[in-house]
Amino acid sequence: MSERPTGITILAILQLLSALADLFAGVLVLMDLVPLGILAIFGAWVSLIVFILGIIGLVLFYGLWTLKSWAWLGALIFSIVGIIIGIMDPIAGILTPAVSIIIVIYLLFPGTRDYFR
View 1 (spheres, rainbow, N blue to C red):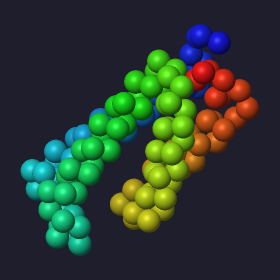
View 2 (tube, rainbow, N blue to C red):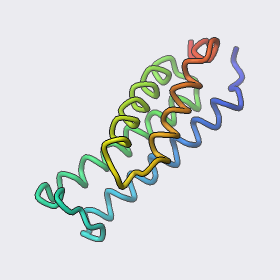
View 3 (spheres, one colour):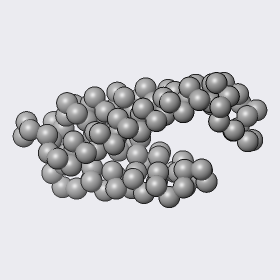
């Protein structure tokens, strides 16, 4: 099982797009171009956390793209956290948790994990 399936390729690309969005959002927050509301009391910390999430996302993209064994678990955990955050964050809307749920379901399909060994 050395060739990456189309589904995993799509997951990797979704992860890349999400990571790039996080990095971009981190920069926007740092430049004070995004209203944070109540989170404004945390200032640059919000930017740093979002930026770090973007870096983690880039690492997960690499792992998914190259079928690294650790990427399956990392993407699963990252997506479950994304579901929780998406449900609690009204700004995320329905799209963020919906995509994360789809990723979790796909990762848990029988045989998907076998590509990451």
